[in-house]
Image 1 (spheres, rainbow, N blue to C red):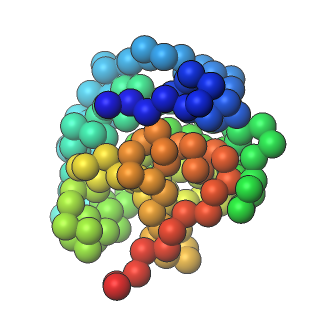
Image 2 (cartoon, helix red, strand yellow):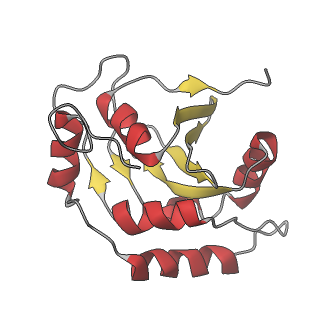
Length: 165
């Protein structure tokens, strides 16, 4: 079930505006592009033999938001300065081992989602639809689903650092 923001849209007003400025609109669905990415990821094998997981949650996120370069929401940055988000799983093509390791730690399959262009953090989505960011400082939880993760990342809300606890 999709959440509805108080002003009647799926996302907070500023996030909705940023998504629409990037070319998103309700009902956007490019399954052909998403399936192409899924095929490329499944076919890729790292030099160490690592392969990507591809879940239905990932394919759905790619179909709806794939190919977008999303600016931060207007007046964003409540806790951190947000970066431009690029929804393109090929940004994580060569990180199959990293995502596999994260997936084992989370006890879920993890697929690449895109990148925070300003920070270089890789965005990833697990089989349950939870979104993460992986950067040189660690692994971060961005949200329980793509909608809330986009709202947090584009709105400048600090993600939660994953720990062994």
